[in-house]
Amino acid sequence: MAKRHIIIILGILLVGGLGIVMARLASPLMPEELNRKFITSNPLDLSQIAGFSKYRSCVGHDFRGPSAATGEKEATPRSMKHYVKVRGDLRGKNGIVKALAPFDGKIFNIDDDLSGGPGDQQIWLTPDSISPRQWQFIFFHIALADGLKKGSAVKAGQLIGTANLRRGPDMATDNFDIAVKFTRPFQAPAVDAPFNHVAQSVLDEYERHGISANDLIIPEKERDAAVCPIDPNVNYGGPDVYFSREASPGDSVWLRN
Image 1: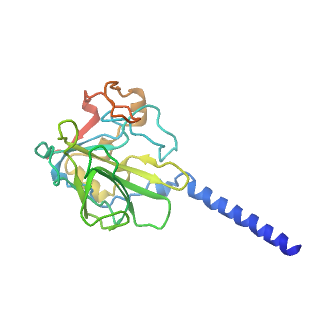
Image 2 (image 1 turned 180 degrees about the vertical axis):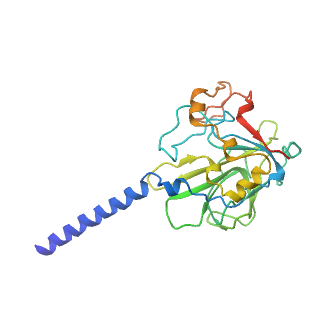
């Protein structure tokens, strides 16, 4: 009987311990995690880039998720990522505009299910870590470089692939996308502004072109006060809503040469 009681107690302790571990893994971001500057190398060759849409812009389509800071989804449709605008002479050209590893780490995931066809992939990269709580840097509309696959190790500055700019009705576009997310067990990926996580040495490169991190973010209250206009005539068959094609000057920022 005593042995049976011991087994029951050990079982209770084991289950309780697992519950505590799972709760900690799924818990909100700690300040150290939220403030981590894990982008230590520029993911772009700025000589190829003309500008960016801002975080929370009305460019493209509704792209939201739980906020890394609050855990809540922001109130109205907005784009919580950046569209990277390439130089005009590179529009529609594949195999040229570089996507570079923003840190030492690995390829966490490859999503081939994008609308652009072969060579149109979503690449998730995560810094070196053994923790299941991870920041992710994401390239959208990228053709992965030869020899790389899910789980491949990468070094900061390494060529990951090139932008797929042969997309859209004319098979020629001038943009691709970048975003950051935080993944942890039992929770949906959380989103945050990419330039919140850029090391100063990388920010210095942007500042030499006249751009600061603050220039790239529309504050949440400002976006809440000016709802993005939806275009009901644009629908690509998915759940997202798309914004009006009439661009607002306040939605983008341009590099100074």
